Length: 302
Ligand SMILES: C[S@@+](CC[C@H](N)C(=O)[O-])C[C@H]1O[C@@H](n2cnc3c(N)ncnc32)[C@H](O)[C@@H]1O
Image (cartoon, rainbow, N blue to C red):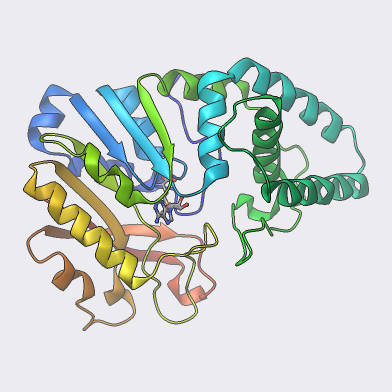
């Protein structure tokens, strides 16, 4: 079974998969082989899972700044059956509760999750790690809209979502994710730390938090650190370095021309790259006019 993201993740790229695949270099599409794949803004890693099922990916690196997210990947990679056992138990207990009790349970889990974060040891893959990952998956499945969002203090702050029958333990998919994570190195931190992994022929997919469109649309807070224009510029520098090493770089970002036709921010930043506009449906936008079909950018180094 083809693995798909096990968390609903803001900015997930499932609807861009066709465009992303067609953006791959011709030789890679022909051979259906990737020696090294690097994804330093992994999130739900939709493209990674797609490639793992449809190409022979010899070695992959996934990184994200969100430590809880990367802990999930590590636990699924190395303690999958214990995780499933724990999730099944949580699911059973939750589904047996009345609506008001479910809400109470949700906020209990959310509070424990936030309090524990302060001094959690992310280096260990022990029982506590399995519990924490179960909490992430539980919250993702039962929260409003299934978003992972943290406030400035780094707390998970999404309210309760009223789902009748949430699938907290999607066992088949979690096992497929475990399979897909073979030959994959998992890291957390800032994207820049993957610079030393870059080599000739590597495929690097960069999907940073999008540059906000207009003033009210600033959904960049996946983690308390946010992603500023200075970060966008650091990323362009990273991408240029990768291009100079003859790696294949694909970058996705928002198209500022959706709201300001004269905005040439990315044209300037990526003047030596190829920029293509693609249609994308964005659901996470507070401005109704920006929902629906808008353009996004796919930028390639080749
Ligand atoms: C647009 S999302 C990626 C979505 C992903 N492609 C998918 O299909 O789900 C951007 C990700 O970048 C991560 N991020 C934010 N700042 C970062 C940084 N400085 N270094 C690495 N990752 C970062 C966020 O935690 C978030 O998961």
